Structures are given as C-alpha cells and as structure tokens.
Image 1 (cartoon, one colour):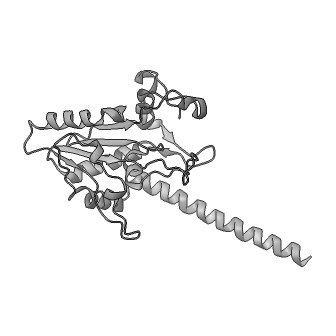
Image 2: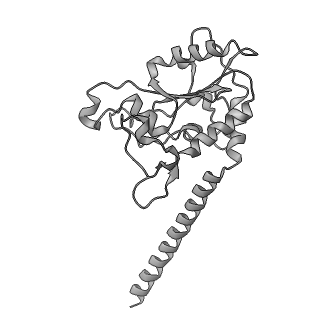
Image 3: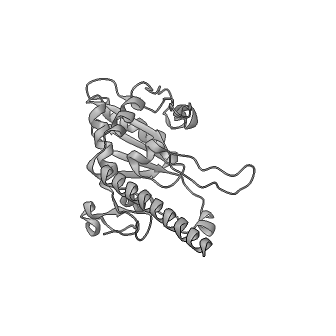
Length: 240
C-alpha cells in the first residue's frame, strides 16, 4: 500500500512494512525499509562508541544568475541512508541507538503560492519513516542535546561527518557539502571514520537493494530492445 504524507496518527499507518516509494504508476515499488536497513548496517559497523552521524543533503541551485532552479538530484550517500527527495535537508543518526532525525528548511509561507502545500514535519516523518523531523534552524540544538545524552556512556561522544575524495571526480564531499554550519559551538567533527565506513556499507547490497538493481537491469535491457526494434522498423520502412 502507499499513501500521501499526512498528519494522521500512526495507528492509521500501523503496518509500516507495507509502505513503499516509487517514481509513479508502473514503476518499481521500493520498500521503505531499504533505507532503514542501510542505516542499521552503518550503525553496526560504527561500533558501540557513543556519538552522532551528521550528514548534509544536496543543495538546491539556480541556473547562472537567474531564479530558475536546476533539476535536483540528491547526494548519493544521503539518498542511500534516508531516501529523501528534497534539497537542503540534514540528517542525524545517534550512536549506538540508531535513532534518526531529519531537518528540513523552514519555508516562507509564500513558497506555497508557486510550489503548493508546505508539508509539516510530522508529514515528512511519516513519509520517510524516521524517529523525528525538525527544522534546520533547530539542528545545532538537537546535535548538542544528542551529545549531552550520550555523554554518560562509555567514551567521549563524537560527531562523525563525511570527508573523503571521490576517486572518479576527484571532488571532496567535505568541501562540496560542508557541515560546519550544523555543529554546535566548540564542537570539532571527526572526519576520519564515516566516509570509509559508509563506502564499505554501500559495497555490500541488501536483499532490497538487489531487487532494485535487478529491476533497473531489466528496465535497461527492455530499453535496448525497444531501440533495436525501432531501428529495424526504420530500416524496413526506408527499404520500402
């Protein structure tokens, strides 16, 4: 089953395993637990030490000096863990509990004039199946609170952020999507662990990910078949 994000109580959406997301009618239905499983795998690999994982999603950009927004594609690591479609979001995973929070832009009411209804944090919480959704201007306080709550555990809680170079592009994600704006005052990030750990997680595919990959492979094959069929028809028509 699937439903639009709403503010209805959770008791009306009890069986969360039945929910999915897709790109529209006729496309593959991806179970929303795919991202929850990815987060669980990351938490397991990060170990029992207390702290938080803090990540920044992709940013909305405009074409040159105009107000025309470019087609948005989510940053890959952020999409892997959270499945979020929208730009300018943040994500936090508390360690070792795995409690997950997302942080959304606080949009001006005028946004609704051109873009439609402004969904509430609770609507997004139900859509993405996380523990909490807050506004981005509440991020620093939330990180500080999570660190304070973890301080009673063994070890000093750390804020793990992404810093690593893509071997194909040569770009450092820490430069492309800096996280300093989300850190509480006086908090220094740990940049040595998360990138390598998360990259390793993405190498090992879950059953849900394998289903998506099988569908994409089939879809690509069907597209090639249709191209070849069209080419044959064109040649036949031309020969006539």
